[in-house]
Length: 502
Ligand code: HEM
Image 1 (cartoon, protein in one colour):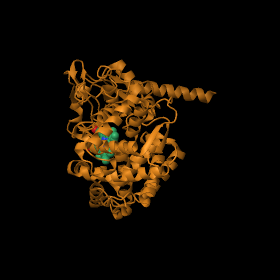
Image 2 (cartoon, rainbow, N blue to C red; image 1 turned 135 degrees about the vertical axis):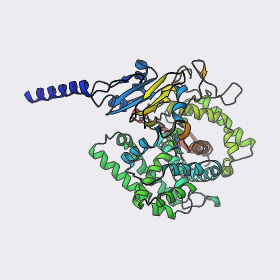
Image 3 (cartoon, rainbow, N blue to C red; image 1 turned 90 degrees about the vertical axis):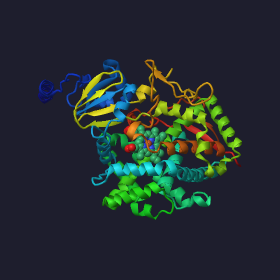
Image 4 (cartoon, protein in one colour; image 1 turned 180 degrees about the vertical axis):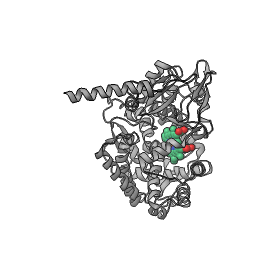
């Protein structure tokens, strides 16, 4: 009893000493500061448990810019979308993107690349994932998705039940993996994915999912001893599957993976670390598109009007172009870009489910001028964080009834794409920011959109499908994933599918 009282007393005294002598004091012109009640830890627990709810509460208390303490770090959160450009276009010598990314790379994937030129890596990505290389990626992705779907089709003569999230993530990740990291079969011959690729990509997905489920805790250093063991075992298996020597031998791979591997070799990265870097890249390139396609499908299945509009557009686009989906390997970017209803549905799904933090490290004491002229001082060593999910995406001033899925929210009355949204009477430059913005905007966004479209078109072509129970509710979010891209559902939802061609 006495020991317990002694312990509590020590704790209380330490807290008093900390608050009296070490507590950070807000300086003139700095954003409102909220250190929470617990010394050092601050708001870490609330932040990690449900960032969206926590940041909304802080916004109600302090307004659209404030600094919170979490696990010893000070994070300034900016929630004014009119002012985001001042951050996303700021020079990297003042607001740095890499420092935080590097610390996460190590914590989540055991990757250390001290000699690698990240700017060169970024340039490689830009060249190989966009512009003139996009048609090759599209063609290869179609081929791989088609092969995987046909494999699924052969097992679905009768109605089959499966979790929709698992089905979608599985097909998208495997298709994306084979496209970027390589396959043994040759898509230019217009055959279908061969058994070896089907089997190997299934194994990659299975191991990836084991790891994916533990990554949020890994990012927060909150894995238990047993979970650490499990994460390491999945990583080790993935390092083997994505072994750099094995990747080198693949017959068909994207120009990106080849250049990336050369870049690592030039920086004298060991083969073992190269494999680790590949697993990191697997997550960076495949962690969002599958979940995004899942939400889009759930919203379609729960909103028959939206599903009918998508189906009608799909038939119109393919019929008017004299295409069957099977000839889609020659699909042009122009045709993919002509599906404006699909674009609106995708934008709306992403508005509701994409919740990345846009995070920058403050490298030197600096001032930040907001769009309305307010000027705030930021301290070197702090972190600056935008959370577009709260605003603009769920901001009722910008989007009427923001919690609701409205498939035509991003369409004008004349059917063209709607781009004009307003807050405080001013046009908002980014009414939704699933891809980030500015100099670190997602490099893979065009490939991701094409992939999601092809996946849905192939699903419509090959299968009849529906929710098993039409009364099932749209699953809630796994709230621990706020900050890390597209959210995942807390639980899966069962759907049934059957091949159209008997
Ligand atoms: C729906 C799918 C996707 C979403 C919502 C998404 C979202 C994002 C976001 C929010 C960022 C960070 C922006 C920032 O912090 O400023 C990002 C960066 C990035 N994404 Fe994506 N992404 C998706 C799919 C993809 C795919 C398929 C690829 C690759 C094939 C990809 C490659 C990248 C790369 C390389 C970066 C880093 C860009 C840089 O550092 O300049 N993404 N993505």
